[in-house]
Length: 457
Image: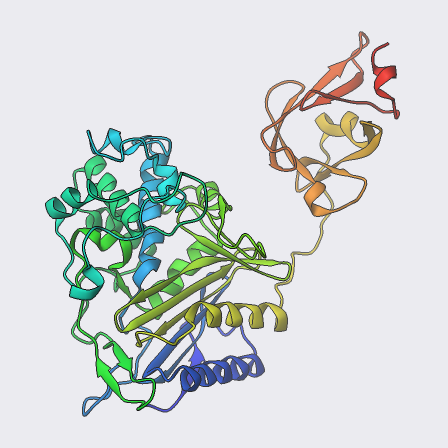
């Protein structure tokens, strides 16, 4: 078994030695507590792999081998985020709609009325697994057998009744991708996601130097090798292999998306809650392919993954541009998603990102008449300029009360972000051309505090 190792990624150092030591201690403690043959982690900051560590072994026995940043592990259900990105990429191109139902792509199916959006969010109520006992036999169906089994599958809950995790739904989304493109799911994911992000060591077929997965006996502490599991037509559910280096590239993209895969606003859409996963504490939610977890006032996005011999955790704090990936080559006992969150939290707490210095705004003559204090529904609302755009905030001065507007023609603005997003802000002028009042989402906004009764005169 290799000694614990930790260090910086290939880019310039961005974490202090003290923080790196703290992170390494967390990883070593986790590997011993979990009794996992090996644990590999990577921490992403500011768009690159800032630090990684590999504790234990990727392979046991006479050829015991420590992992590296390029060692492949099976990532399990983290694969679902790639399937979701493929779907959203096709949506952005206008090749499908999230409101399309399965009937569009699988005519005459028993589940014809289920929309793609519900399947992406685990809100469809479809049963958890494909028909058959694949987690006992480790024999997954190929396409025709899978599609035949779909007709025997149940919708076990009404749509949107509750979060209900469904591998079946994601296997069906893989079929939708193939029907739309006429290509195999893996090829679509490679061309649309993996290649643009430079993820050259990610795919369905692992290299010979991959990590080996193990089950550790809970009493004897011995490790036995788990069999490989090829997922066939259900590969979109959890079939990908990847590495610390590759998933670090992926985490960096999720944290700070650009146009390489989908539009940045599409990633924002995917990372917004659609359904709560924990209705008691409201600490978890699921969006379009990505899960969300809340600790205190912070929300982290990502996904966990589990396959025979492998557990994976991917967490990103998008606000701070920090992410972490954790691999364990063990079937059970490794809390990889929790550790990934711990690592991100440790970085954000110890070395928070610094905002850019403030600089004076460029004068915006077209906005001057709109700036300052206004009133609506008897409450103050302030309009101001930030980063060249028109903004407003309510009197409580909370970030959640702020709205950013985008110009939409003469005397028209659209709420582009924040409170009442999507609503229209209209400027009403007096006969002399001066601004008389505003309408925001049809509510009157005036320079003086007026009662509803006064607005009628």
